[in-house]
Image 1 (spheres, one colour):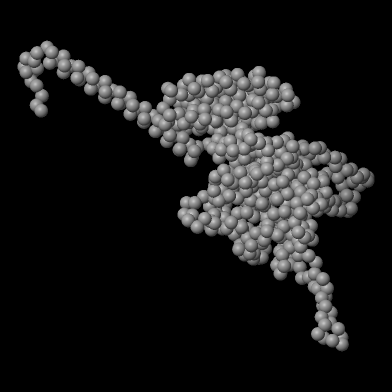
Image 2: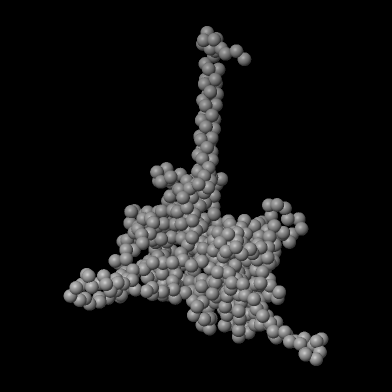
Amino acid sequence: MEPLSPEQFNALPKEAGYLLYKTVIEQFNVLEAHDIQLEKKVDELQESINVLVHQRFGRKTEKTQIDGQYEMTFDAAGNYILNEVEKLVEAGKPKEPDEKEVITCTRTKSKGRREADLRGARVVEDPVIEIPAEKLKELFPHGYKRLPDDIYSKLDYIPVQFVLHHRHIAVYADSRNEGLIVRADRPHELLDHSLLTESLAAGIITAKYVNGAPLNRYSQAVAIQFDVHLDRQVMAGWVIELHKRYLYRIYDRMHKEIFKSRLIHCDETPFKLIHSPKQDAGPNHKSYMWVYHAHEDYGSPPIYLYQYCDGRSSDYPGTFLDGYSGILVTDGYEVYHSLARKRDDLSVAGCWVHAKRHFAAICQADGSDKAKGTVAEEAVLRIADIFHKEHQCKAKSPDEKLEYRNTAIRPLVDSYFAWLKQIRPMVDKSSETGRAITYNLNQEPFLRAFLNNPIIPLDNNDAERSIRKFVIGRKNWVVIDSVNGAKASAALYSIVETAKANGLRPYFYIRYILSVMKEHADEVFDQDAPYIEELLPWSDKLPAECHIETPLPNKTS
């Protein structure tokens, strides 16, 4: 269609000119609205890209300030540090304390950091370095007197040793009848016809399940350093056999004990299992390691229990928690909620760190300047205020804490959810901010649970710290070969983490319990057998060498 010339346009009736004008305006408005929609979509996509880029390459800590009054730092697991009057020293390399700080000429050492750092080292008093008598006569022709020695310290490292024992069993034969041969009784061994001893087993388990070293790396290190060759498959077989024969007994007994806790933290993480029990399992099939954690504040000793599952349905925690009555503190995974709906004796409490994390990721991805004044920043500040108030009642009694939560914290929670419901219609549900709002509103009843029970914490960080031990190991060994290996790993992570939580040294503890359990190898397993009770990580019957003299703080990795 050819455009009208000026003469033709001027010749048009007024009605036709107005109609053309109206059409152009309408089309312009449509295009303008379309441009606004496209610009909004681009902003949403950019927000999603920023979040993904930050998750892949960004820092893993979050800092929040409210009115400049205090600062809260959240790490990758959502653990928070509250600083009000004092702030932590900026991260840097620790400085070795000067000898002058801890050493005096009178042999009296002050209680300093060096002494605390080296409390586990064996102390050896070396021979005194003296000046020869002839030299002393030259220096002090009129005589001298001996003052207290000047003392300084040096730390030696002595590598571990592999000692091959040749154990001789006496053999006797009748001098008149060579067909009659009698051998002395062999002592009980962990595994028949095997090189494995309790100390070697404890060393392998500690290397893999405490230090996170895969068995092939441990095998290579031993071969290079000590010229001792331990096959990876053989060691894996030893670990599985130890679990099947002995260690499952400790695990099963701890499983019974955790049911005494009024509250259990739960979490789960995927991993790859090479030989899945599912026949139709494809290359992308995921198995899961679940963790259940309880500590002394809830009515049981500190216990960490890991459970291997070949899926993520509610059947797995349902079976594991069959017979348990209490509270589960979890993230927003629907499986826990559906499990609680099926049972009257279970309730679920949500995690405020997870609620905050969705908004914090947006703020971090956008940067501090761009995030100012956004919905995400406002949400982070509101949740930080709730954490701040909760911190104020940390030392209160249960009744005092419940009263404080209702008077000081409940109004903040009410205001937070009312604000979310007010702004929800104004935010696109498909955006990162919209999804964060939806997540929080869906979790509202579970996030409010802490207001009605003083033992419920605001977060599920205990479970996240627990599962991280397995995640760190998973990064090293990537996959698990078999179901038996997965079950053994679950039991051994449970035992070493529970031992550490109870102030034990895993190597010495595992070595000791294996030395005792091999004497009961042929007995029918009884959870309540006296020897099992005495071997549990919280038993007061464990030898002193199993205990850490001064328990280390529970630091996150």
